[in-house]
Picture 1 (cartoon, one colour):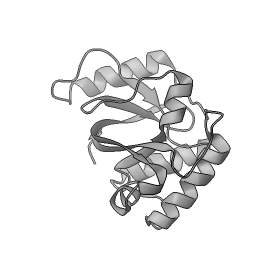
Picture 2 (tube, rainbow, N blue to C red; picture 1 turned 30 degrees about the horizontal axis):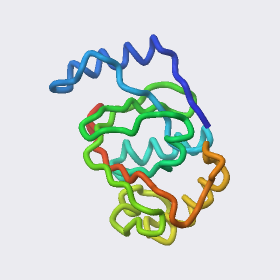
Picture 3 (tube, rainbow, N blue to C red; picture 1 turned 180 degrees about the horizontal axis):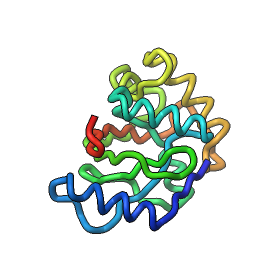
Length: 157
């Protein structure tokens, strides 16, 4: 699912947030939504708002297929709800690329989904990349995964 928001609304949201963020750049960061469906995006957004979700994982193959640059530590992202409205801003704090089958318990817990175990994380993400990957390569047990940690910076929890 690709969610896009209204550029004017996103710009207004970013300008409001910049007043509360130290050293925030003038340039509007990327705006995107978590998940595969509107409901999934809203569910994951709620976990971010509640301070439960502080991590996410992405397929490196999806980045390569789309030609998108990888995130960078210190970078801001505007997180949209399932309808494309900007809701929160996160800042990337840690990035690690590891094979799917080497993602650890700590990262799985940081994603906040289901029972927060590694077994659950693997089941959910295997299903997700099998069914929703942008890359025709889909899922493989040794596929490269970008494990990202972030902090909620606006509005603050």
